Length: 149
Length: 59
Image (cartoon, rainbow over all chains, first blue to last red; front, side, top):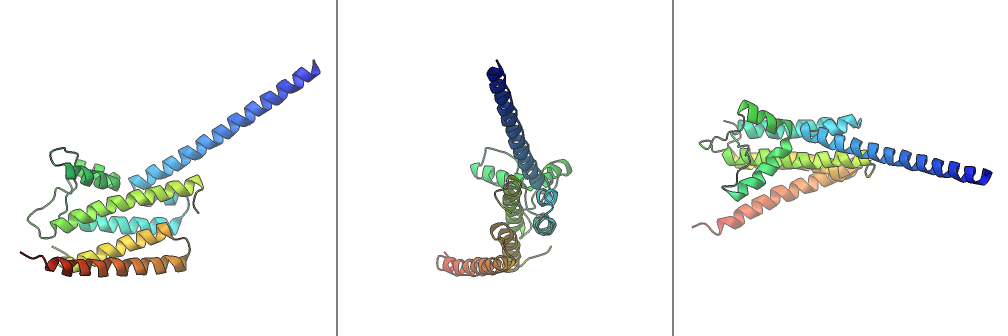
């Protein structure tokens, strides 16, 4: 009778431990996903939430400067359209800008000024900023997941 | 209208890309600076070389 009770206690303890580990794993995973989403939304915010202040500041300044220069130069932020398949790639890189992409749709930013000689470079700046921001957000994800310091 | 010079636009673009990639890909400060400088030189020199290469195919 006592043996049975002891084994049940062990089993219950193992179950509790397992659920606790699963809970921790889930929490860690959700934390890293939140860091990724924060980093995607605003450049450097993922690193800021991880208390990497210098990196966060440099990332924010670099990506914001690239985006601002792209907009000033008359670059275009592409929306999803299937008429020209190459613009789908541009859309995926532009959506990396996170909050700016959403704002551009609301405030009609980044419409693209073809008359300007800097239009192509402006578009490249915006796409480059979006792609770099993906890398920054993934870096924040890795740091939060403990894969990187 | 700013940055009419394509060369200057390209150099500034390369600078920002190098800064971000160096911070992501290298951990130590010394390695970051080395990586950023070498990447910057490769990007600028590579673009200039490729630009001159394309000059051969002017119609």
